[in-house]
Amino acid sequence: MPALARISVGHRFETLSARGPGFDHIRLIAALTVVFHHAWWGVNDILYRYSHGYMQLGLFAVIIFFSISGFLVVPGLVRSGNVVKFVVNRSLRIFPALVLVVLASMFVLGPLLTKYPLARYFASPELYLYLKNITTLMAHYLPGVEWGVKEVQINGALWTLNIEVGSYALLAAFSIVGLLSRREVMLVVFGVVYLVHIAIALTLWLNAAVPMRLVNFIGLFVYFDAGTCLYLYARKIPFSGFWAAAALVLGVTGLGLGIGAVVLPLCVPYLVVYLGLSDLPGRMPLKHDLSYGVYLIHSPIILMFRTTLGLGAGGLLALLAALVTLPLAYLSWKFVEAPALTRKALLYGWVSRHLPRFAKRWSGGAPRRAETYDLPRDEIEADWATRSEHAFAAALRSEAGGRQSDRGLPTGAELR
Image (cartoon, rainbow, N blue to C red; front, top):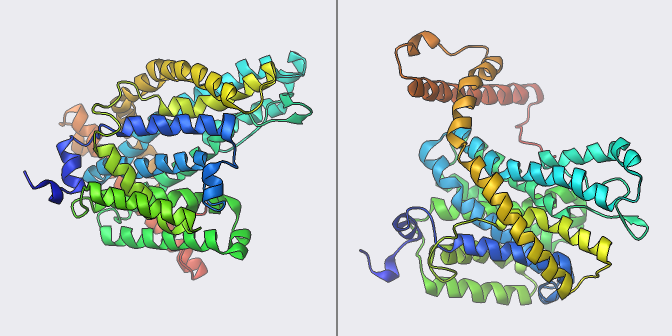
């Protein structure tokens, strides 16, 4: 056992069997912070004023989510290189609860709160446009659901999911082209994203010129990418209370000096990972991960209390929202999220069996089934999945090469 001062983040992570005891607690605290932000503090909170307008408590909770996510989702992808399994696992974590919340908002909350007759409500195209949220593309309103004389957003917190899915997509793309196995290149990617983030945050004309969707994406992806690099270099990064305290001091000082964009992407991910791998937030992981359910559910609950009881922003609204949201989040975890996660192997097997059809369309070829007739079924599925991923990656490279030769310029993913 190495001396405590020389323990690395990687060693600590392995000692805990790749599951830190504090991450569940941190995520739940962050989710409840978002609830109180939306129900009470609002944008102009104490952190917003202290940081000279760079950060508020709700957004700070979100960057904690992204820092943890970047650190925790990459190990399996690095070890296996199995992009199909990665996509399946991430999809089962995000979409089942999201689908439930979107449908409940449309067919339970909306009919209760709408000022329209129910026949008009259900006939409105605006109702079915709300289904866009299932894809993580935003549709904010339901027909006739108003606060005073204005339409109100039903679940504005969903805006981060599109960025989260985009971050996963980029990570999968990095794996396909082999960048995840080249950590120096990934560090360069982080450096570029980090510098762009600083430039946008500190340069008014650039902030105004860059599309807001791209500003938001970079502003969160920089923390996700920092978490990813923390894992890739985990063996070289010390697991140290001293450095965690230094990160805290530097982050707080930088925020007060108006350079939060410079210091937070460097300090927050390390501090969060240190706390997640320590037993300071809690000695044991939580049995039920309620954080995602709290995040998805709380905004419609706040809206319900505001429109039915006439409550304004404040401590009472925040308390009521938390008291109702937590039990609903438990039900979501118990009956939707946890059961969905037990279907990972089943869904991965189904996708593996059917993916060759799509790979054939991309690559112009078909998997050679004759080679697998004498193999057990699980080996056949694994073989098909591997060859399909290789075909898909080759098709992407071929397609990208074709576009480059046509235009004479390198191509990249377009953020939409």
